[in-house]
Length: 244
Ligand SMILES: C[S@@+](CC[C@H](N)C(=O)[O-])C[C@H]1O[C@@H](n2cnc3c(N)ncnc32)[C@H](O)[C@@H]1O
Image 1 (cartoon, rainbow, N blue to C red):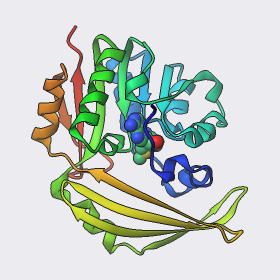
Image 2: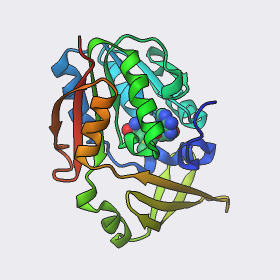
Image 3: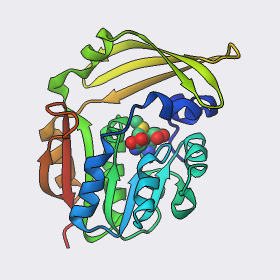
């Protein structure tokens, strides 16, 4: 059975406004440079969501296989200009196509959606199998020590965006629980027609040693742990290899 993602990604009305609330995606620049740096010709994008990275890569002539369990997010992705060049898959790490990819990516802190050790290890093993020998894996996860949830809770709880084709949509944020390593929050969206749709999420915050251990346990060789250039001191960006 395919994983059941949060409403934020899986509800059609929330998937339709996701990009509008997701900022300018300056975070993706470092991944574009990474793809170029490792000379990847075929990239696997796990947890591709609304496909922001996948279409950028495809536009640069990179072959992209993009996978996500949220059908509503994939529908948004498939409607983007250039989407026809991407190989989209509705699925998760347990059903990855046999890509023999040069590089697998999880952007937007997608790694934090894997809450249990079992799910996380299953994802890493699936990615390992989907890479060619010598292929690379890169992903980011928020540094627990930065305590991002305190920043989230201190920000104004309401954001309004004018979403093309939809109108003014209000997003309300509420931190609903901190029980480390888990942090829970709720988004509530109010649409111009009065509809109110909520989404509850719980993310897992893993420390560096824990991630390094899990990578080794799943057959990866750790190459580097970097900062995210657009979010210094806040993220760990792991680069690992499936040994050749
Ligand atoms: C925060 S979003 C990031 C989306 C995208 N990578 C980006 O940078 O815009 C997390 C994504 O992980 C997906 N997801 C949730 N559970 C998953 C699972 N078990 N396997 C793969 N992806 C999953 C969600 O559907 C969602 O699209």
